[in-house]
Image (cartoon, rainbow, N blue to C red):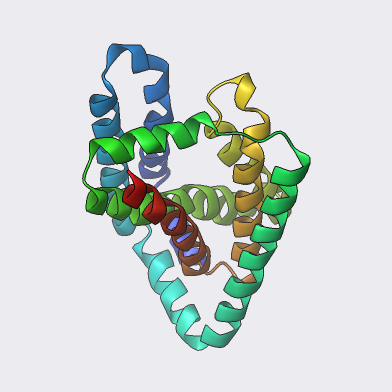
Length: 217
């Protein structure tokens, strides 16, 4: 899939900077109401989803062809890695003082401000796909042409955890994010850079958390 690395670097930078705006909003949260911040976040994810589908369409098409050729192997990988994620998550919550992260509270606020179907569509489906574009396609697939692939997996996981941290009091709370990103990154590599495989697991993980949340809200 080397042809997918031909997306112009200028467009990649614009895409990455736009993604960073999602997290930059928190630094100006005192200027906006919860509704405005939530609307901005949902809008950015939607724009990035549409842009990412267009920019990385070749990688997605290649991944679809690869998925069709190895559906059984991909399914086994998804099941196996999901159980690994559950195991590590349980151990993390048991061994570390992990509470309600600020990021989780922000998701709860967004869920209260908008219709459930919108939350599930954007945060449950579009959001994970956007994050796979950033953390798997850009930070692993593209960057692995310059540094070792497992270094890319580690770097993308650390960044994923840090960008979901709002303060130093959230430090231990980034462990679940770090864990899921390491698992998704490893899954991406062992699936031969099939982007749809981590997308499926990431989307399933988000929806399984969001559906009870929106029903409760």
